[in-house]
Length: 265
Image (cartoon, rainbow, N blue to C red):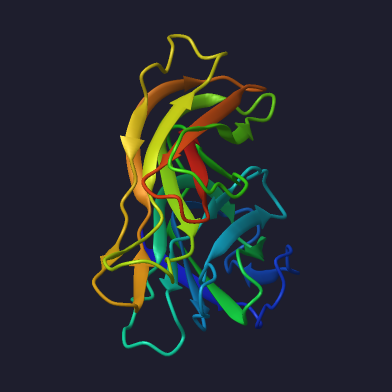
């Protein structure tokens, strides 16, 4: 058994809309089945003053097998001003998965940036020879609208699981998205807060299912990397049900929350 990886990078994107696909062609003999074991994405962009940074939604599709849904939000970089000192890491977002990957199939990668700066996304897929064993992995992301108060935003993110695609929820990936504060007194806070998840169709109940996201803080105006938080779970996730996230920010800066559900079927 061997391991393989293949990568692609998008053209520069300058709009907050779903872009045309970048594609990865899988080598091998017709009829050969491989196992997709990991996916990773990196968002490369120029930081701008007092706006959300580089990152967004990555969607992967396969033209030979049904991966849908298979999409997730990346981590991102953020800046207070464009002229202050500081640097931010550009890091990959990576998930271990278990999914079919036929030889001679094509993986199409779509990207929806969170900001209209010039931005490129790279995607790398990793696979091993041979068919997968055990449950298959699915991912689906969603995000809320802007909030500007340090109080609970009820029903902030709603993610609907397609009929026939339910299973066991294995993890919740949360990335708070927003701007660093320009006005005010240092230290400068970054997006982040309390996530409270529920699914009224799940049995047994998810309640309670709460966690805080990671965040960042600066003594002077600069830049920071906003890390995602991976909250492990083992929860019922029925098909045609809705997973709902309430979000309570730590600060009243303009921000919203992105959530990615990772489950097995």
